Length: 204
Image (cartoon, rainbow, N blue to C red; front, side, top):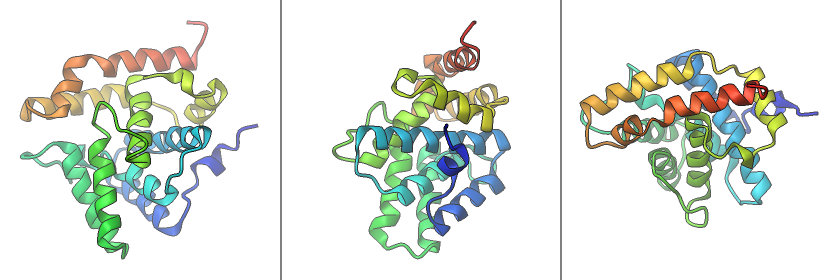
């Protein structure tokens, strides 16, 4: 039996503060996306036997999309760069040394890369593939089907896909050279919504 509550539990007090931050400044659907992404990232990391920092990954995963929220949206830079800056400031407030603050920023910025080498950045790789699964429905076969259903039952997707598609489209319109523009043009968000509908109801 999958203990979803244990899986979603923040690994440290600082990680819990990152969860409180995303819940305070994001919609419930966006906060659920962050928690689902943590579930996908951490379980895949464990399955692959990767050595990764659970606290660092959790914090980055909670904060990675704050750049699309009204309070932190930046008109001049890509949303992942804005989110990376928020992550750096959060880490500084947590008393983390400069190198660890920089790592949070890097992981958040790299989650919009098309690929992150796990040998060079295990946390960045895990966040990139986890968010690709949750947003675009990429490679769901890498995870156990029962896990996917259990986590999405505990953290319903709600209107996440539709709302996130609007946010990314807005980012793309204002920042046409950004990775958001690439994602917006790809059609991967609505395709991901269809994939997740199939996961929720395999008979369809």
